[in-house]
Image (cartoon, rainbow, N blue to C red; front, side):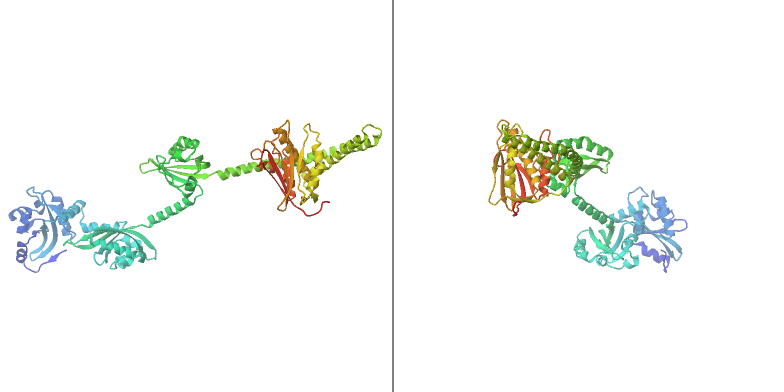
Length: 623
């Protein structure tokens, strides 16, 4: 800036003669010093005769290039305070040098002002000299190019005095719309109380920060972190608040995504855990806590939650593979809170830190229990389909047998009838022979009925339901059951209820087949346990809660494992050597068709097993 003086040069000389600031007048053309005052001589350490008539740069030892550059800036009216070393006699020290072009009576001059800076000014000017720019130019550069928001506000009123382009971009407003407003006017209303509470500290602390939300032009709230410092004036009193404003939108968005991810991990229907490089867990999700029985202790590692085989597999295969390739996927198992082994499909991922060393492992496990149960069920269904296929084949075989056997059975019936006629009254034991022939005829008729029944059952034919007294059926069956052709004779012990009578609606042939099958099974069980003197088989009838209950009780070895359910509902399930596995299944199916059910359990009052038939009781009279 050029300053005009209306007075003569002598008046200017008198003004600077006794000034406490050093003054020099330099010829703008050649750079020689023409005048100096007493303070300038003191500061430069030379008398006026050694200063005047010499180049300005000769008064600042070792700073000639800087002095020439300084004069060029003054001539171009760009100069500000600059710090130069004053050492004509190699003395240490720095001076604050300011220059301006003056138009005096005898022409233009470069007016140089010299003074000793304070320690703070010394540091600031030294920094500016070192950087090659003055403080104001540095500040302007910061304001213009910083990606951080920047604002300067009056310390007391909080009026905004200056902002940079990044701050304007955050809010979506032009600079002129922001300058002159107060900082609180841009804050979200809910954040004002917190802001004012923190703002009170500005009288006590030179630096502070606020995390608040600014209201943008589009109405959106911009989360920011304001790092604020107090700038004092020359009287060392607070004058300005200077703030760097960091937009936290991306950070908040990342935190929000992290929160969503954590919610997802907590809701994930499988195990999620994170452990350090020493394999100690410090995070496990809700599923893992429920499975393992709460938070894992930091001391709990691989061995604490895996069965031995799985822990070895993790240490010997999973972890080395993840460390080398980044991840590993395979089957493993965990121990639940009861110590039971639970199968899992595990994904193990290795995470590297900033030093490119593995610092974390994360583990995700999907419970395979349901899948394995499903696979077992599918295998079971496959077996059932194969059983059905065998049953279909048996139906064809039964039809063939019925066709092939009906003719021989008919012939046997005819032979029995002829035998009746040929036995003469004079024949010894004629009555017994007639009785024997009658029994042969009855058994032939029974065999024919059974063939018809089995064929109809396998083809799904309808049963012939009629009122039936169960006690009467059992009593009629007793002679045929006890008069067995087996080597070991069967003895029945009957415990039949009479009041009320056990009446049901049933197909007598089908129900007879069920009882025949179960009683023979009970006899075989008794023979298995006591072959020399098998005890009798007990047949008991009762009427309970609207049901007729028929119990077949043996004193054999009892039911084997899984017999109580699988042996009743699955065809071809057998525990007998050479058995077909169809007897119990047919009995179970027949009773289901009658609206009843078959159960089996070990005798709670002694040895052996009890098979119970339960059928709906009927009030109809037996036909």
